[in-house]
Amino acid sequence: MTDRQDAFQTLAQKYEAETGIQVNFELYAPSEQYSQKVRAAAQGQNLPDIFGILSEKKDFSSFIKSGHIADLTPELEKNNCAWKETFFPNALRVNEFKSDDAYGVKPGIYGIPIDVMTIEMLYNKNLLEKAGLDPEKPPATWAEFIAVGKKLKELGIQGLVSGWGEIWMIDCFASNYAFNIMGKDKMLSTIRGEVAYTDPDWIKVLSLFEQMRDAGIPAVGLLTMINKTAEQVFANEKAAFAFNGSWCVNVYEGMNPNLDYAAILPPAASDQYPMMVWGGAGSSFVINDRSGEKEIAIEFLKWFTARDQQIFLANKTKNLPANKDALEGIPTILAQFADDMEYATHPSIWGVSEFPVVTEALDKGIQSIILGEKTPLQVASEVQKIKERELARKK
Image 1 (cartoon, one colour):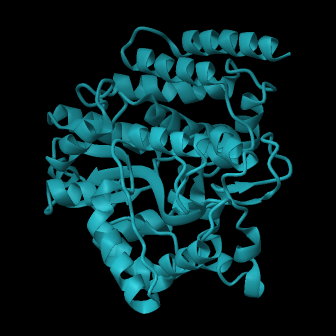
Image 2 (cartoon, one colour):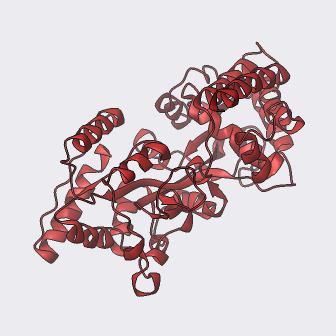
């Protein structure tokens, strides 16, 4: 969050003026450097009063079980849940542990979101108009998306750009369509090992990438791009569609302030189940349970996530506010991301997690489909073999 230094400093000065309490923000980049610093501080029992966890839910749970993170449920539920009710429910769920989770953590909410995000499809209005299409009527179905992609290719306009050199973004895109084609229950049953990746519905999911490839939709270099490079391509109007998160609003503003684009749900491949998108808390803070200033730190977080401060942060940093009462006055493009928060899901709230080697095999397999090296069935069969191997080891 180093790009938020000035905004955070402004709020720290405001808080000190109001309360006499000094707040010091220490921000670090890249993320891995920050994570290492937090792990080292945890081992040395000298974590700051407030900090963030940049890791999977399993690691989050280990911090809690080691006594490093306070359960904030009692504070959130005070005064008829007054603080809790200010947040988007999906934002709080990212930091929540339930009784049926596999993490062995006491049920509760252990983190406070300071902003939220959704990852959606973006489209360039000017490029769609150039292709003779109505820029106010982007493709709503997969068939329409493929048809638009073919038309763009005929005109020499690249279709979809995204940072698919970072395979977690492929995983995000694929899981969106898994939810859409087979529904939540079957999707999660696959992770639990009850449904095979060779199931016909998974073949349908994987076939979408084959259809994109055959329509010429993927941008040149899609599979080797980091997301920052993909953002530059879209900002420079070199591709008509992008798959990116709401954080991109601030990025595109810096790259091309005149970019005319909009955010939509990814075009649905099925009308049987809703299209889900990854979303929820973007950045969250937790309270050091061993802090001597714990109560003061909690009061600061209540102030920090209140409406006025959230409106200031949303306009200054172009990130979606976690406080649902702070949406007024935010840029239109941010509001488009916020409108789809009801469709947000995230692996951290599923209660089950896939074996990392299985996820990697699936995502790399999708890359091989786009490259034309393997068929959807071949990829599904290879992924299922790895899944069965890992399930056998677990037993």
